[in-house]
Length: 247
Image 1 (cartoon, rainbow, N blue to C red):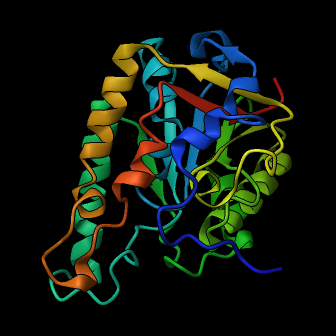
Image 2 (tube, rainbow, N blue to C red):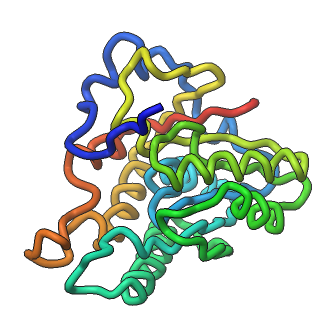
């Protein structure tokens, strides 16, 4: 099977609100589906947890939910040929960006860095790393299977394996699925459309803005181009987030 393309502008945000899209997903208040125990968010790269479920995490943080983050990679591969930042310098920047972004959501979570290679994540390594963090009663939130990026797909598989191994629920969020797929191609079975308050939307926008290495160019050199362009970001400025889960 050919891997979906993550280049270009992708599916327009307006298309997701057409037939077969997000309007048909049952809407809920995030507080009404808040897990009773700790939430462990598994992020393939720094920023994925914010893009996927940042607004929901902000709501849950205000409700005193304990949140932990498993950082699968440190994101050193986003600008491999950069003449401006070495991979090590980029890691330092992205770690600080994540800290600031989570703080903007009202979170100061424990972050477990697995330090797996950006661009070469193996599902088995994710499973072992996530399982080591989990404890009974947790809820895992990880990328949806088939999100489309190789690291995301390996993370989805590994996190699901870890959750099953420990015997905890695994919920799902999407990042790149919104880019390459179209309404009618996505199953929303088990999905919920979590309606974000204006406060949560603002918090998520502020958190996304903290990832300056991704939302702006590192320099004028083409090798330092913006990763999260305006059409991509439009899909994460919604007043709603989609999660798939067993509850």
